[in-house]
Amino acid sequence: MGSTVVRMGKKRKRKSNYGLWIIVLLLFVLAVGYLQARAVFSPVDQAGAEEQVNVVVPKNSSTAYIAGQLESEGLVHSALAFRLYARYHHIDGQFKPGSYQLNPAMTLDEINGQLIKGPDETIKITVPEGFTVAQVAGMLEQNGITGKDDFLRLTDSEWNYPYLKDIAAENNRLEGYLYPDTYHVSPVTSPEKLVQMMLDRFNTVIEEQNYIKQAADRDLTLHQAVIIASMVEREARVAGDRARIAGVIFNRLAIGMPLQLDATIQYVLETPKEVLLYKDLEVDSPYNTYKYPGLPPGPIACPGWPSLQAVIEPEEHDFLYYVAKPDGSHAFSRTLQEHNNNINKYQGQN
Image (cartoon, helix red, strand yellow):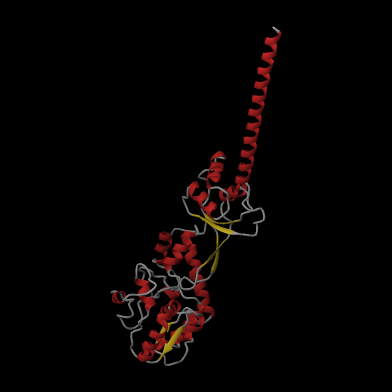
């Protein structure tokens, strides 16, 4: 009996040691898992509060799409962790569209809370000089402000502004009149209000500058002045060239010479090109200033004040031609021979 008791004690000891190792291993796995989970769910950068990242959540975005955005912007460690967090807390699908300012120091709790609450009350939207109406609409949609199609429909309709009364209601009716500026809007700002804000700003500028009279002093209607300003805006790449390019346009108009501006061709192409081909110059459109003399029927972009000013204060000179140089400025010439020399000199460098 004694020897039997001893053998059983050894087995119990071995079993006891084995069980202890299992417990230690489980505790180790749990500890590692806890630390990994803590790392995944912790802020990406505790010291990154000053690094503001703009995140746009389009309407009807899925949690998976938002999670991918946040991971790619370096705001969460793992898109999967974000999705699991949202599902566990029953907030999947509750995120509001709009433009958010987030930072890498935010926790998952804070990021999710902000996305559920919605964007800040005020969103800053900057309309760049030279944007077309279509580009403005696309930018607003990308920032979660309004749908592109909804905005474009409004820009083709009637608006009660004196300076628009002689412009027919048609496609791109407001081209040239959505004033480039920075606007402060809210996530619930209607597309009608957005259009009104830009038209009001244009109205303020032309009234403050007495622009209609200054255009009339050059025998131009406001619409003609805006058309020329839009071409200057799209043709000029450096500020110092605006007034000089405006002078070239006036010089060509004065002698009945076709304007032959590449920017007007780019306006009617489905996809703008870095370099136009000869066949592009044959496109059948009233905006084709290679084919049709005089001004195109409407503006080709929304000009800012510097380009509008260049039209009423053009540089007086006798240049008829210009060609782009590698630095973005232009070389101007008086004769076709000089122009061709400049083409050979500069276009090979581009």
